[in-house]
Length: 436
Image (tube, rainbow, N blue to C red):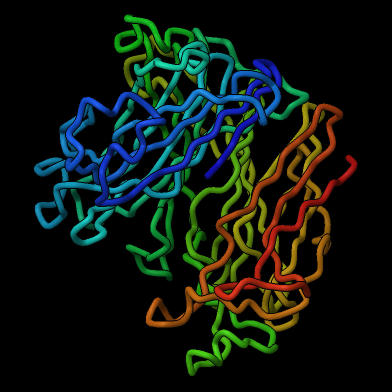
């Protein structure tokens, strides 16, 4: 579940996904679903909510968007021959992420097959903010980005832009929304770790001011461009600092390494004036594959009238950030309008229990030392590494960084505190402020 507060509209926008074989009518309150029979099922759906005021305790408008990608319920059809025949016909949505521009609220999500978990591609759901203010609005512009049918092509993901609270949206070209892009959405490398993944880039949606109108299908345009860069590797498992792991002992096992989970791009910041995009992601920086952080700055040039390559992307700078012998996991970047910000990340390894950390960053890609904001107090003891789920504990999905109205940075980072835990896991979220 992810949530965006739009200080200009003074509204909260929230999205999460539902995957079940149960009755669609279980979610009547999220939309117009009663027209279906009580026994009919929906494979996957997107649940979207918009607050009616700036107070999140007041009523919300709720919407249900079918997302099974089976060609029904106004969904795009991702079935073969667009994809490999071995992939299933019906997909489920995973890990939706949210963003906003001047006119719309956006959700990007990966899709996987129910039958074999094969990767199908990405959907971007674009919804007019005006429509979200109406309790029975149903028009959603869905931009389907199928994966290439070539089995050697790596998986990928896209991530919506974050606009700092002290910055402005890009209203050029009728409204422009930005998404960062990189390969490998699944965290299981489709390529040799020696060669690594080689492409990062940007998706742009223009004409967003037409969302919610009858002209949206013809006037809202999508552009894509990638840039080649070498030296990005899928990170390996990260050995933990030794400590008690009572849940592991219950299941007859011992401390497990941490799985960095994915190399998805995390956190996309756009400077609309300079046409620059910042993004961060995890990589195995060297062939020992310890997780390092990469922060990259791209420059974008969009000329819609140019038929060949209307969008061009140049990788201006990228920096490696790491802690010797240990790992940094799933970073998120945030910069204010003065070009100052932070990279929020989790630090873990043989010398550190999973801890909340950050490094400062400026517009010239100068990165400061890694600072521990919230020190971990125990090893990660999570069910995802036990009971046949896997050989490592999954960790790091739930982190972000943001800028407030005064231009200061905030981080929300997973760590393991020395506090009472649940039965299934012992991680928590550490929230901190960095005055810039």
